[in-house]
Length: 358
Image (cartoon, one colour):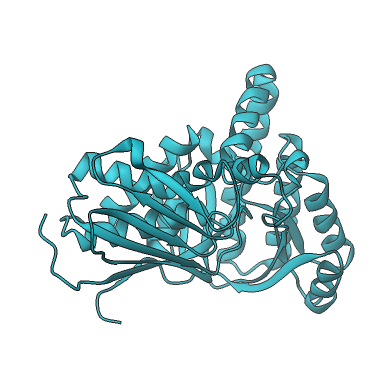
């Protein structure tokens, strides 16, 4: 596909929080997610030789350069700024997005520079993986002149997530694409108009510089590991898990009604219940559980794990979501003392934005 010399494309997408229904949505239950006011951007421009050169500042580790030489898989190798011997695993979402587009649309005959910048904390349940997929696919499709619409970008990104993770809800890629609020019901994506919520996000860890290289690369695929764990436990305790899943489905429906009625007390109460259900299926590590309990004890209307959750053996990395009520300052101070990254966020932000003149 011909590319205009000097052409530059930037695609940016929002981070997300899942308000209700994470994990359960993989099994056809309802889940509600919202975009928040933190973004990831992918910039695409031409380079002097064929293939891809990728600069990544924050995703999925501390910075990597990757050369994907056109037409020769043996030459596709990672050159990390940090010495992570298996860093190629951590690039799964970027690499899979490129290879998916090559196979489906025949892109890749030109030299491409890709630069990724992010305001989204890593491996924290805030949608960095989906954001990477959506923004990379949107920027490359625009750069190579691939015809299509926003829904096509969302669908392509969801396909990439399934390739990498083995199973994936459509909710993360839908939020990255559309922004605002999204309800996934029986695997169908529906956009909702709901009022803005002021929330606190507390993130535990990221990828520490001292982490073993194998652990660092595994952490880039944390979601896949956690999703597989839930699947395995459900296979053993099927009837119990199915009852939990049904409860989560009804909980999401009641939460939407509470948000529509601006009933923040019930929204918070339902967040607390949702957290308990996530703990029951085994995705709440000790450090995140402590943050949730701390927020609740300090007067939060509600608090819960958001996103995939975490695993103690992977450092308990992940995020909690807090509806603070009148206790926001105390909760943020306590979280900071507990060594969490603390962010004030607003829900309902703008979705995918593609720029050609910037």
